[in-house]
Image 1 (cartoon, rainbow, N blue to C red):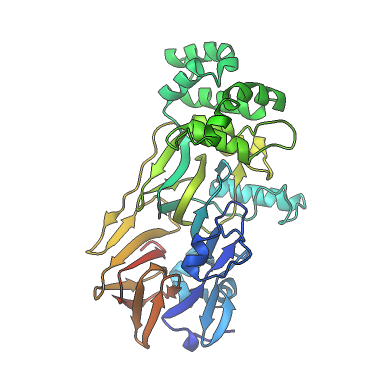
Image 2 (image 1 turned 120 degrees about the horizontal axis):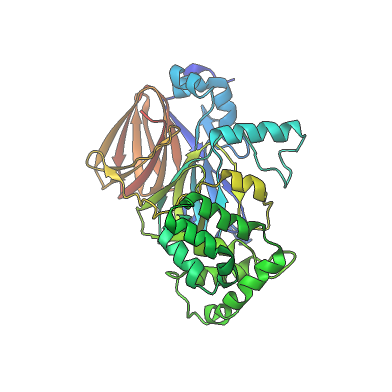
Amino acid sequence: MVSLRELAEIIELRGTPQHYDWGGTQYLPSVFGFENGANQPFAEMWFGAHPKSPSIARIASTEVPFDQLFEQRASEIMGIDASKQWHGRLPFLLKVLDVQQMLSIQVHPTKKQAEDGFARENALGVPLSAGRRNYKDDNHKPEVHIALSDFWMLHGFRPIEEIISLVRESALFRQLAAEFVSKLSELESGKLNEASFLKELYSRVMIMPQQEVDAMLEPVIAPLLPRYRAGELHRQSPDFWAARAATQFVPTTGMYDRGIFSIYLLNLVALKPGQGTFQDAGVLHAYLEGQNVELMANSDNVLRGGLTPKHIDIPELLKTVRFQTGAPDILHGKEIGANQLYYPTPAPDFELSVIQLQPGEKAAHRTEEGMAIYLVLSGQISAKQTRGEIHFAAGQAFLCRANSSLYLNAEQNSTVYRAALPQ
């Protein structure tokens, strides 16, 4: 057990990589200093205390898994009140992602859904490592992210007018148009509300037999594939991503993954570096390409809706999806002080900001009841505390304990991401 007197105000953290197949091979190794002669995919770097892959904390020349450190000294790290509020667990998880291949269509549960689902699967004796497991923990997973490059994603259902036009006019839904013509009339006359119509449409494509999926998608996707291979399709069009999905995801039985329907039903979002979005519980989304920093509640709960070989539980998915339409809010960050942008969200678990410093610029931070993790993504800084000064270069991270004062000094042009408990 680490004694309190050994816990400095600043604790160095080493992230842990995740080697999912969709990750790139160059970006994360270059930022975080990994050798990758084997060309292994590096999809994510985790900075947090999730038991699946905790960061490593350096305490008085000793390396300790971050989740174990929290078990021993949560009140000193977070503060007494915050430790009680979060039951001695770090409530957030900070990540850096390199999305080279499209991720699955997915949605995250509410806190209540996660608690009920986790308890239910435990009672059924489903192992935590089982592929058919939906709930890996009892927590929700709201998440905010900031693009580090041009970043492409799907986020929430498109405006209802666009979906109506899609059903009426597109070749994709031609075979369902007659089936939904009365529903469209009811929707437009006010007899059927938007959420009910959308749920019926989405449920229909998600539960239809695979032969129907192939029959609907084949005449649309087959002509796109040679154009995609010839480089004639552009990322601004859903056709590009549908063709890419058809080459990347082939179901074990049948020709086409039904997640391709979601590429046309959801908003296609192009983010520039520094822009982001917030994914609340129930919002269907998927990351398609690019690098980003992501901050989420400390959970690994994902319900998938296609574009994946992994487990898909359609009934549970349909209970979780929020059937609302409209364009997503794009986050640009709000200035707080001369050198910090704050990305507000309604999540009670975390807050995310970016500190940008030119050589010689300084920034002072005070953690009251709470704590913060700082990730230096570029440049080099010194972090001053009462016991002295520590230097951090790109790819390094550290924790600032509750009730501490921190002074950052840029030795180069530096960008630092700050994940914290809300103050």
